[in-house]
Image (cartoon, rainbow, N blue to C red; front, top):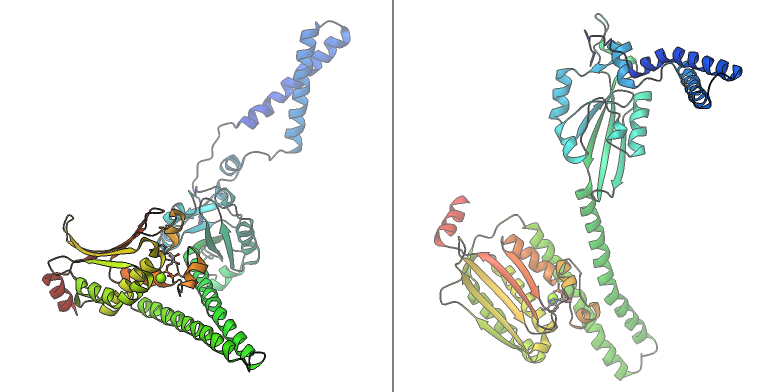
Length: 454
Ligand SMILES: Nc1ncnc2c1ncn2[C@@H]1O[C@H](COP(=O)(O)OP(=O)(O)O)[C@@H](O)[C@H]1O
Ligand SMILES: [Mg+2]
């Protein structure tokens, strides 16, 4: 940073100076009015005008006398102290603009010297010469800049913002010594004085916070889901060891419940494990060509006993041509099972579930479409956006009654994402629900392409 050299001194009179010149005139008018009134020469209107003018002149005179430096800052900088207006070295400016985060260079007083383009994108429009408080209104950040300039120590401030977006930011404040030391003095001499600039950078922590929050919620939810059947098992064990010790009928009943609770725990652990396995492979695209129609037929056959138990008929439709996708067979089985089971459990009142595989050729590239439709009560629209979140259920009691873990649709979503497919959920109350998954159709060329890549 260097002081600006050769800045022409502005000789134009400022408004304050013009007022200062007018003060003697006011004083003269005041004198005339006082004399006029004293000698009873002036008419009342003139006397009132002269009196007001005199009063005005007096007040202005007082203000200018008591605060001779009360001129606005830029005028002062230009007119009286041209050397005090700092300018940023072009090398420093280049470094600030190359920083990957929003960055501002400030004077020790907190005025903006320069800012990079990222500031405009995430903080606001920074104008050189403005105080930082015009741009950032967080008192902790402003205070950190002041203190860093004072004690020459860096600072870090975390703060949350609600408006215009709910976000979480981190500000780094670093005092700097940019002024070149006088010739002959070493670098140590330059570092000894007060800092001559402060670098302020921001980092957006919103995404990181959101992930941390999701992880914490997930652990809390999973523990809660496991603790409930565990508490029930411990309770029955105590009862069987105590009051029900010699009651064979109660023992049989309790053992039945305990078996159901243990199965619930193992289902939950299975679902948690498959979720983490799918997530682990999220970036690895499956590359084996599989025929979706055959998989659907097998899964529906395997689910026939459950369908019979619920009084539901499953109708499967398949295209004449093979419906091939690049996929992981086990994951696709899991996906179809989850959707068809949900349709049978929650839409049982409709007595019918349609599972259709079609080839959609209307777009640029053909797609394989899997649609699972039930004719049950449907899902109220307010729940649709959150349905694929882990442990989200429309009716917790109904889900538990059906042996649900609340993880089925989260698993479906992850499998679909890994297969680069798209999941859509449509539902009208009392008209059932349709879960549709679209995959790219695997052709000989996509298969060859994928194989040749690895
Ligand atoms: N076909 C459907 N009809 C009505 N509600 C459904 C249907 N499929 C899913 N749901 C709702 O979505 C919730 C989440 O489903 P899922 O993730 O599979 O969990 P789970 O079945 O273990 O409860 C279910 O609890 C249920 O409330
Ligand atoms: Mg389910």
